[in-house]
Length: 456
Image (cartoon, rainbow, N blue to C red; front, side, top):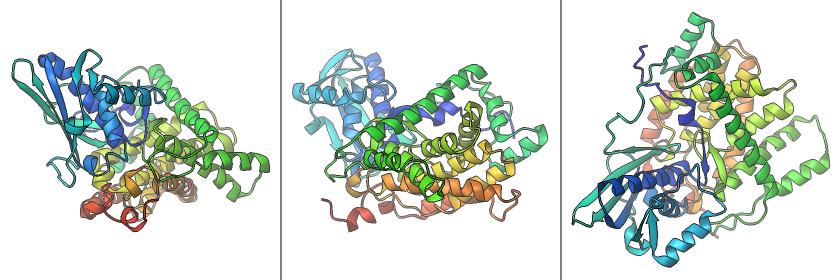
């Protein structure tokens, strides 16, 4: 391991507070469009702007609100700042005027009929989520840029040269689960401690604590809001929200020590988050929007059902989960368009299992074991959303992921950390499985449930 290890990620790269319904199809495209809008105004005086969507962004873009994300991004809005409740009015104004305020500064004509194009079934080299943005300038010149939404809201561009990201040397770099075990044994540190040490290369500990508190608060607020909402989710499938009724039923039943009742609460927590996500609400990308309910549900389980749970334990849970998330980003992918749903719900389950194990006092080897169990039993999970919407089966899959994570944590805690399959081996298996998986099962809605269930 060296200081130039590619594991120079920070916790802020994995957890972002944005909007639903999809990190790769909504958050990423909004960021790309906003980036392009700012850049093109530095190049000249744009007269027209055009967006072309390819691969999974084209095939399931409308169901994932990619078109709306592009309009908002070109207008200068970012996932972290746009008000989900105000977004419909902003979109309506653009459509009515057939024009948008580029980067909030320059009005240009824009018609979705000709300026926002879905190239169905056409993929670009580089990634399954691709988009090209281009503009004609007043002097007759053109400016264009190709972006790839690579998962979790992160974007990459054909113009990236690597200079925009700070060259931070981490004190304890790692790129494998074996590295985390070795570092822990060498320095007498927990996985969370390794993360705290590395985060101090980016900012003070107090700033990181403040960030973690904001992430935790956003996760719990999303659960609370989801438990208050009712009605049908947008998109045409007429999926009715269930969290509010389930919440009322659980409250009416009162306290219970039955394990099945605890799992009903956990399912509620995940359900409420992903119903909010499907409605375009404010969620935490953890590590994606499609899997945004798993980690909050396990965090809420820890705080609600574990005796002596506290703020430090919540921080340990989130920091440990982040370390595991880094391993998947480094050695495989968290993009469903590349890996299927194993790269979203599977990764979130693995992260949550590790985080809960750490918060419950598990050793580094038990944490690594829990993360491995969490993924091993999600291997091969396809991404086949009906109607291209992050609703069926995505919402319920988060409840399953959260329950599996808790199961994995307690199973690992019953052992001594020694096991047959390592986390690194299961991550490599996930990567190979994702590569072997046919594209119709990877966020294209061309196979699986998406074609075997008639849309209502």
